[in-house]
Picture 1: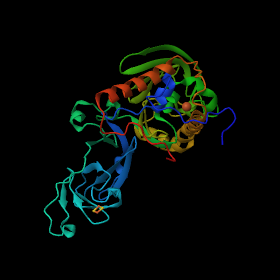
Picture 2 (picture 1 turned 90 degrees about the vertical axis):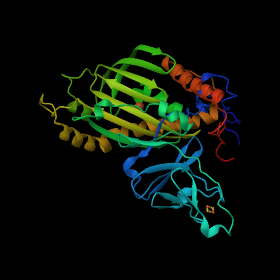
Picture 3 (picture 1 turned 120 degrees about the vertical axis):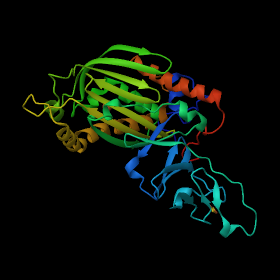
Picture 4 (picture 1 turned 45 degrees about the vertical axis):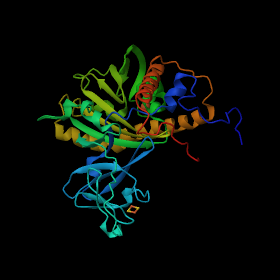
Length: 373
Ligand code: FES
Ligand SMILES: [Fe+2]
């Protein structure tokens, strides 16, 4: 059944795409980077969780010694997901016949199932893992490149007096490139008219190079009823904001005092997990000029998270999921884009994916199956 005005065909693959937007909407993210995949506190000792990077399922677990490991989530015996299994000491044991693998992916025990046959030389693919800023970072690509790729650094969260901060994540049924477009394009103040995180945004400057797109808006930040009374406008310039798509991450900076990073995890063509880290050195005690002590800032953020930040970003999620559905039906409608930076964001995503495909034909599935296939 076709909907009036809608294309009955599916959106084009990366290779079939005819314009930048279509390319961006089909592109993956370069696996030879570090990706935030989970909160460190969410994977307790002896706990296994499934992480999916661009259709590749990975079993992430923490041994009894507290050390994290990540391996291919498929037992080589009968292809069960190893995330159904159990952790014993620092080993991962398959739920079915109990084959047991160490952190390096080596099969270390299958004696109960050997029928006297010599030890199989089966080995799982393993993925480098790190922990930083309370997040677990995974390197889904070529492990020999992991050492040379830097994780994002946030100096404000390090040292003796780190800034107050707050983290949040969402899983949205949308392509990762739409998330980047959304966070960098301040033309959607209407969507947030209830919370007014920014108003009257005018693009003042933008610049793109091989690795990033940077843009600055003149705008009025934090105009909402709650944020308006907490932000110290005498110390912080809230009349402009700098944003950057620093592939594959995204960040913003308001007056050097209100900042965020956004880390996207591309699950598949139409699902993205998004981690936000907000950090502040900008809050005052309401109705006074006094800077808030850090502990009070942390408390204020804990209160503001469910009241302000979560519902505000949920508005973006609603719009993005609707945009994804619209794209799947009307992907061949001519792109109408008024913000000149949006095509630059899409070009960067498409170009990096093209580079990855050109240099590597293996590892990650390149043409992910569409749901329903
Ligand atoms: S399926 Fe995993 S041990 Fe048999
Ligand atoms: Fe938004």
